[in-house]
Image (cartoon, rainbow, N blue to C red):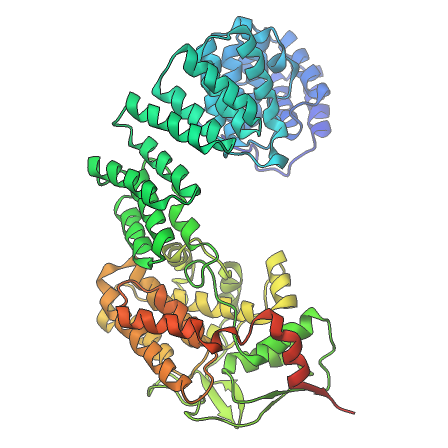
Length: 609
């Protein structure tokens, strides 16, 4: 289905005015097009249905004026549905309305009297009604958010009327239960599904009953019903995954994994069981290897029977697996507090115990130009020096003041990164795929973005980041620029490639947020390409060991973030994983917690008299 013409949309009233003019002139085709447009804008508008009836009266029913093509306009589909119902063919009309709901479930396509009429089910085959209800269920989440339920309630009314007329039809009862469950009518869903199983015991009926019980919080009955479904059909491995998911929801992970293992013993490549098993194993022990294995499975099986959200669910809100970590350090902590408290930073001075990353200092200077930063000392090892020699320095220093050492990026590069940069992603392979939009940028542009981040875009997210935490926007730009580097000259073999050499140099450059961004890009490369995992794990291990060694002599604001990056790395050795855990749980981990911002502000700033 399509949304219709490319012209600017007219209101329903404007469409109807044009439809009436066309009708008066006898131009039925144009009249039909405008009526379809009006129904798209306002599906239940009485005037639209009156004009449709008038059109039908002068055209022998009007159905032929609304033909179905390969990409039919949704308004055409809906108009045809109403005319079919008026012509005594409501079953065909319902199928078309359900198709429109599948196209856009937020529109009230079915909110018309003929759909909710109590007598309608008497004219319909109950199995056909069940198919329509299942078609609607397939297009809706479980449960449907409360705010989105109103356009779907006519179908629930249809289900109520149908069950009244056909009280012993098992398939209809099960499908009606599935719809009721999605719309929050859980008690009704249990009643209908229970009746359906009594009328005709079946695997599908027990599954519907199990889902209804589960939505009602009756886990024991849900597991019993799903177990009976397995007895009906031991080869339906999707039910095994459902049982595992239900057990996991109640914290019974070992039992849940027994069910996924049973399914995998029957079919090691069964997608639902594979996804569920990896998700539950990660939930049990937190080992990222399970998620990497799941990502490998997804890559190697692109034609799974349906979409799964297990990988994204496990990565959501986790440092580097699903989002950028907030910057650590006193400078940005003070900046956040000043912005949150809407305090005027003019004339205030921040005294840092030691020098912080250049990206942090530059961000503070840009976001709060009136805030003066003083550094008590430059502790050793000198953070202004790269950790390893490089031919590609990005910063130059004048005392404790950092400035970019490479030119600014092009306007095109700045616009491209504004459109793409975001603090969250579903999982590392998804971030890699999204960054392909930067593949055509040259190396100077990508490096320029790292030290000349453009202003945040004038979007809702951009305004929030600019107003509450400018450091997060800068980190977003740096992360996505480094992901863009992964797409640079991909024809070059990895070991000697420009992209690897550049990212490794950035990892070992001046201790900075860019270090984290470059390391994340390498970790992402390891997620999507098993052949580079050993190499990347070695780089990560070396860099984390270096950060831990430096941290024994001075503060390393990026250390905890590097530790989280290590734990997100495929094929990481156990010793490095243990070191990462120590850094995360150590005393430095909480230095920039939000609750400390007030004390930081009081301790680190003063007003000039």
